[in-house]
Length: 226
Length: 348
Image (cartoon, rainbow over all chains, first blue to last red; front, side):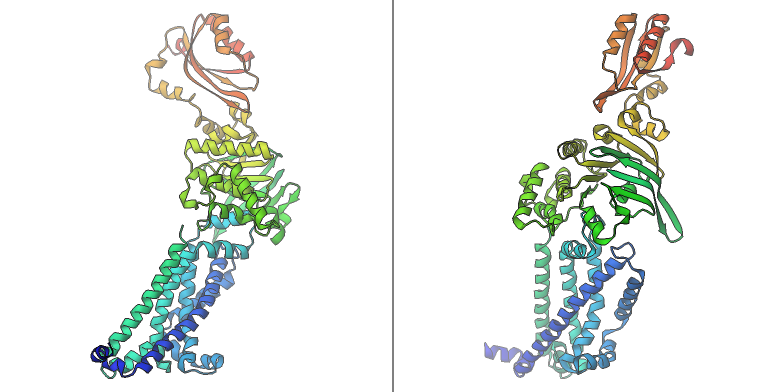
């Protein structure tokens, strides 16, 4: 087995520790920024939904601000975010480079996209249900947790899957700030040194990661659809 | 029980203003089934939402069971709403919860223990006759079953009032009837005041005690269902009543010159209608015996509304002219509305 692998992917086998490290880097970057984005995105998506005109806590000022800020950050290409947010990164994380340095820009790149996904998911909840909950004496918080979020679990799961997959894509660019990860690994060896087997193996690993995420997402969505 | 006083509701969308409800004042009695009928856009759905303040009225006050809701805010209003159940045209059940979960939804934080909630939900499901569907999801139920679950859910906090917003409009006639009977049962057994919004006169006829007719945001006519049916005042009310009665078909037959309504020299077509609650005598046969005339019934449409017959008969009367005139006078004395539609002698 060992020999066979040495034969077909010699360049990967010769730097296994680096390869493992880059997988780990990708996972930590995606994991940390994923968790933070999940929470922030949910909060912003819910806020946008309820403050929208006609929403249960409609508030034009908050909604307009939120809408503009989300659009603003969505328009910035991620590579520019990476560089542009370095000062902020340094302020929050204490460093602007490495895996830690990548988390702040990854969150900024993901949250606006994710909160739109949440907004779309919540928009699918029939307004009649909100009315019914109100008629039963539910207050806004109860409606958010027991109706909006609960009823849209399948759509939220789908939106989260899409976001998680695009987040993995973004981590590939994090090499720009020296964060490592699979994308960086593939560029550095596979492309720059023309070790094509490195590229292929990286792609296979990424495909596996994406498939697992998709499987989990589909499972949650299916389990909560009645 | 429910007092709506000078209620107006205006929606503003940009520069446009839509006056959905204009100065409506209604008193709904305790343990009454009150109907509000109107065509789509008449403002009836907005009006019913003003009762539990899902749509806060722009002007006017709402009082339910002695409490002025228009003064309440936040938590007090939410608490007051628990005593006003509401059911909807499209049921509005939560798809992610089972039948049990849907009915249990409003019971959270009600002070009941988990076990008490379970008992309460089972009892409610039994009351609406759907106990066997406890673990089903709404998507597995038929329309009628969904509405039963919605009714159980609306009853969870022992409300004194239940508002029905077109609750039977998405159901077939048979299911409609079953749901209406259920509402009537709840009204009888539990003494719940029921407000029914509908665009179908048949719904009003089947269960309501009193009815308000709405047009363009205003209540144009209000009264006991029987008297509304017997002597409608407004054109729109007549239109609604016509939609449930076959007595108007005579006009169509006449226009088509159908052989059924071809008259001989001494005949005339009359429409006899019940206008008061007292009629219970076998009038047609009495008249025919007493006055030596023949009555050939073309249409008859008599229904029981509020325990009294309503509707009437379209018939061809033939006989001596004096006898016919006397018979018609006799019927008028007996509180039957007599209307001559065509008279063969005059039309000749």
